Length: 50
Image 1 (cartoon, one colour):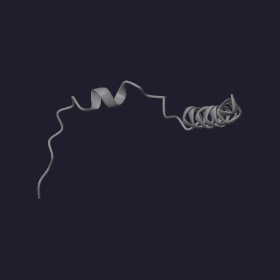
Image 2 (tube, rainbow, N blue to C red):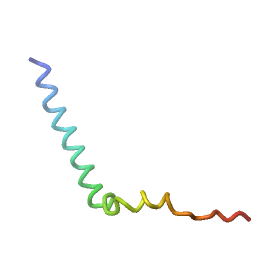
Image 3 (cartoon, helix red, strand yellow):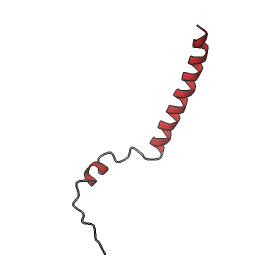
Image 4 (spheres, one colour):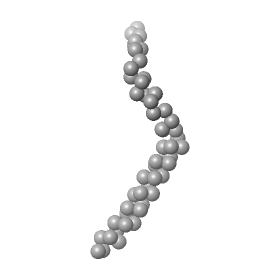
């Protein structure tokens, strides 16, 4: 039963940290273009060698 007194606050701190990182990622534009990088690998760009 004593472990609950440690685990509940630890869980709340961890949850707060995860939500803060998720909100930061949304505000910084990490999820703006979800399809662009997937199609970028299919482009046929040739690498120029000097």
